[in-house]
Image (cartoon, rainbow, N blue to C red; front, side):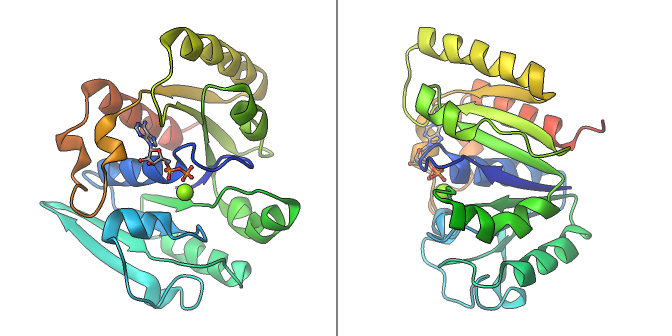
Length: 227
Ligand SMILES: Nc1ncnc2c1ncn2[C@@H]1O[C@H](COP(=O)(O)OP(=O)(O)O)[C@@H](O)[C@H]1O
Ligand SMILES: [Mg+2]
């Protein structure tokens, strides 16, 4: 299963934090691969702090690193810089996905038409898209898209604390969009441990609330569920 994370033109919605959290939780039971396709190297920074090259953008095969978290093992394709040969990268990712039960591709925020075009080969090859949006109108408007026949799961995420009434309101907006788009959604709570996640705190689920853990588990379940 190949999943791309997406947030329209808005950065900072929590794509990378959720991509890392999902991969860590999934790797407890599934062979998982996390591909850093973001130009800013967000996944790479979360997992390694700083990683020397080669990077996905220059040498896909050489970019693969393995991390061990106790008995959990996760493979990460590290990156920095925009993908200059997206087709070449997409072909590699497709090949890797064949030997992984879950492959998550973290994309940058696609801020303009050029960026959308550049990353299209990666979006096209995925089975599912995880849309990460915040409970505010700008984020939702920029992010709620259909992707042809692909499975779409929306994470209504709270990278900062939002009032419950606002979250409830936008959860209804998302629910209504999902009904018309044949998509599904999960409300992800604000979780302080996530904002402290980094190389020194990668076993983030040792510190997270059961609500956050349940939300991430549900996202994994919805993404992997057979239609
Ligand atoms: N559910 C959450 N709870 C707390 N902090 C979060 C949550 N989701 C994301 N964050 C924090 O929000 C910030 C932006 O997240 P990030 O994943 O880098 O966004 P994006 O990849 O969409 O640009 C980071 O500091 C991250 O740790
Ligand atoms: Mg990011």
